[in-house]
Length: 245
Image (cartoon, rainbow, N blue to C red; front, side, top):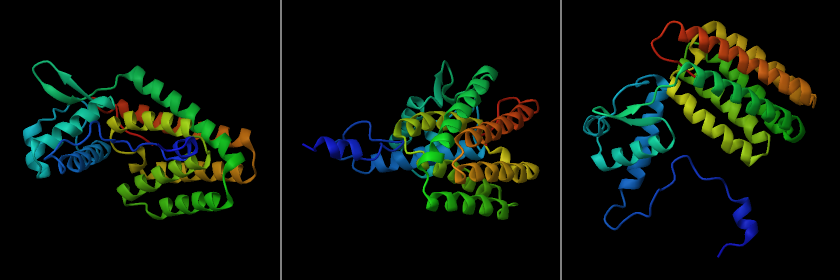
């Protein structure tokens, strides 16, 4: 039996843990289910599937080149994450977020990421601060490659979250981030938003470097509120809510 220290220091579980021990004869299904889950998350993130879209096992199995069993496992995990619902006479479908839910998600994101910024002023190493600068510069340089910009932006926020050194905060933020995936592609697909976000990131990193907790939290909250404003603008031009900063 592992000792208490080992249990406390182990990494938190991945976003797609095995839900049951693998039965005999099904050794390939769990990894394939994980792969299907990740591919579906990426399709949500890129906006290739969106709120209200049906998720038919047979169609997904054919498209991904898998059997229906790992697709079923992936849909079950997405349902556990709150991203998929089962509708009468429809079956599995991507859940729709209503306006109030989008507002609440961004409110909580501001609270949690603002806290991460505050904690980061105390705990971030010089290496992590340098990495934040590097990621922000690479994000600006990647303008024109929307997928890379979004990926670098996510990495910036994850690096800051790691620098906060609080596993409970990481878990809480993971739940928010999973739900935000429903909203689709990043607002950073808009060129003007990239330069704005980079300037907001720079102010945040400067505050962390100065070990100014109040300024860091304020900078992060302002950054999330600005992203929220872009999201609301998008909501006015679509039938369903859109993406994550």
